Amino acid sequence: MAEQQEQAAEDAMMTRIGQAVMLHHGGDREEARGRFLGLWSEIGEEGDPLHRCTLAHYMADTQEDPSDELAWDLRALSAADELTDERLHEHHDSIAVRGFYPSLHLNLAADYAKLDRPEAARNHLRRAREVVGALGDDGYGDGIRAAIGRLELQLGEGSEVE
View 1 (tube, rainbow, N blue to C red):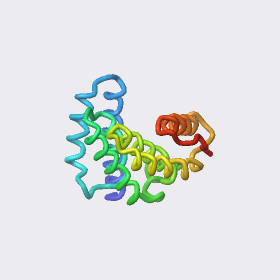
View 2 (view 1 turned 60 degrees about the vertical axis):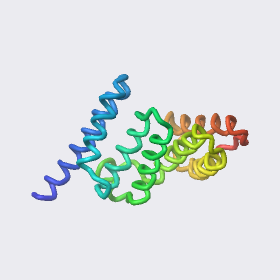
View 3 (view 1 turned 180 degrees about the horizontal axis):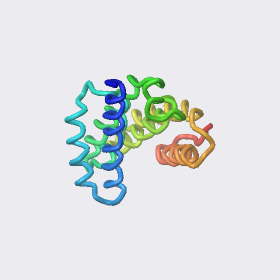
View 4 (view 1 turned 135 degrees about the vertical axis):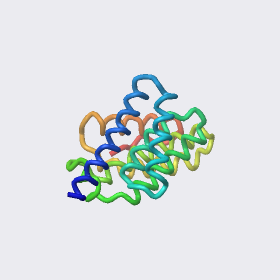
């Protein structure tokens, strides 16, 4: 019974994160950022890695300052490093943690490019390229591969994406 209640609470947090994401995608960046901050205070720095990774990943997109965006994307990467496939499968059984890394590294590369730190950007872009094979041949995977290619061109890199 306690395990079922804990699972329901975890699902409720993912639902609340998803609601804030919908606000952001609907154009209400300020409200989404406020909700994310409130949820972050509930989750905490040591909270569930799935919650921290998901929230930080989307919170980064609501930032106006590239340094703040970088800080949130680094939090997302750190949480992903703590996340296990077992925990992820409790939420959704058809995804694996390795599928998070292409997007996480791509976001960090873009952050560093905005901050005029091209070497750090290239480092994360190479890391994104190295792990992009974890993504399927679908719309999402194609989108990430295309974004890697665009950023490679912007940084003057080759466009050799798997």
